[in-house]
Image (cartoon, rainbow, N blue to C red; front, top):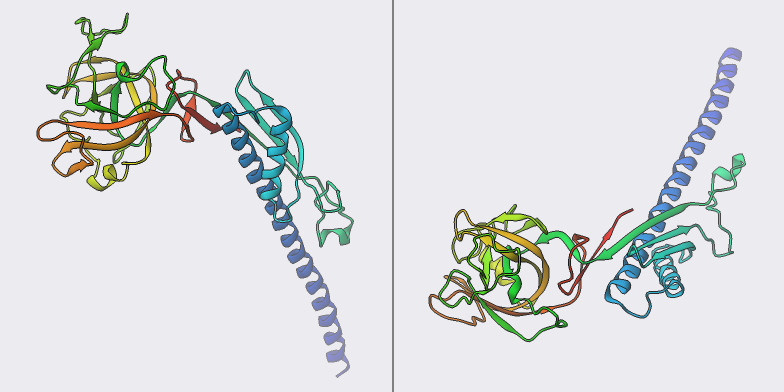
Length: 320
């Protein structure tokens, strides 16, 4: 019986040590999870602040300055922190490079700048400052996702005028109602002295979308109906919305085998179209004609890269 009692004592000590180790592991897990949550909240705040500042600068509003940028970064940093406290360490606004970098750090309600763990303090760890940095840039798009592979002639874009523009009706450039434009110098691949007006269609990457780069040639989708992969319901849902469309400044051939040279991108508000068959919403033309109506406008998109020419709207991207 004496040996049995001794064993029970050893087991009790072992269990006590095991419980302490397990509690320590659980505490460490909780502290590490809280640390990652703090870093994620700061990164979300930095991303949101950088994008908001870049949007103000892209739109040319009066708040695009260092003082207002810092205040805006503070608002978004606090809004994304679960305790509503975050420290704006620095906001680097470079108007020449069209970039903004937001650097955030930990801030407590007592004004401290260390993230303080709950369990790790038992072993003497007093905390650390968590950081997050985000950089956004803005400019005119040089490449982007076109969510409708419709391409409009550059001669239809109102050069030298501000946007928005009055509503216009564009016809398929291979149809009887397409009016040619004078070709721009050096942009006349077929040598006929004219640039086709109106619109055409591009082949797609997936569904009804195509990723496009300016100053590149892309294959035409033959025919006047929407490109292969464009469902009726999808195209119809774009009416009343702004869609970023490619602008062409030269063309080789028409239909199958034809190619377009992309000069840039414009933001177009679609009000109606008639592409034949079921592709007809608020039709601005009838019968065998193929047309689309709407107006060019300004705004911001987030699924492209800056670096292109000005066609009235801007693109913003996170770069770090």
